[in-house]
Length: 227
Figure 1 (cartoon, one colour):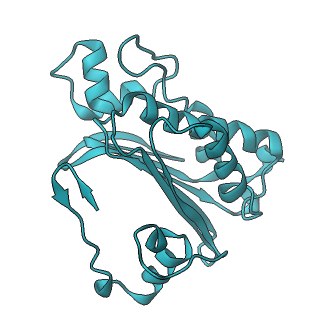
Figure 2: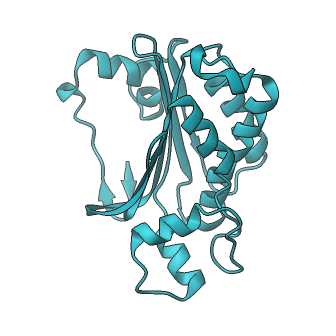
């Protein structure tokens, strides 16, 4: 795979058998030209959504509703499921509209039956949330972690940068009740939100783009509000 003048190679012989099996199961290996064929299992299929694709919102919402929250791993009523899917779509929408990525967004996930957790990851390799926030607020000195905090605040919107807040208030409330976890990496900024914590900090390492990782507990005892 070539991007920005660089070449990426996968050293698959360094992976454990379980990890390679998961990458085969969700279709990642097939997407990059390897002979392993995907199959139905515990994975949320690997997905690529180029910027500007036709019917992208409809396809992503169907993907999230059917393959992430619609497999029976998580006991949740349809109205709440649809509301959460709509909020997660905002993550995609912001990346499409303001990420300025040449290659779009990549998604995948996994259900871990022994741990009873369900994970979803979405990543783009665009300019990142902090760069957009600094630009639209005309605050070039703003720390990456403060930019993430601002972007996650309800009601924050801009005219020239991020067109709306990331729309995660409902998702955050749900994750806290569920004892789940939301993590966002963008540039040096790192956000983690769980039942007891909402933390925004700057890391030493830098991630070019934005990575969002959502973890849900599939324990029905935490879903009184979802019934």
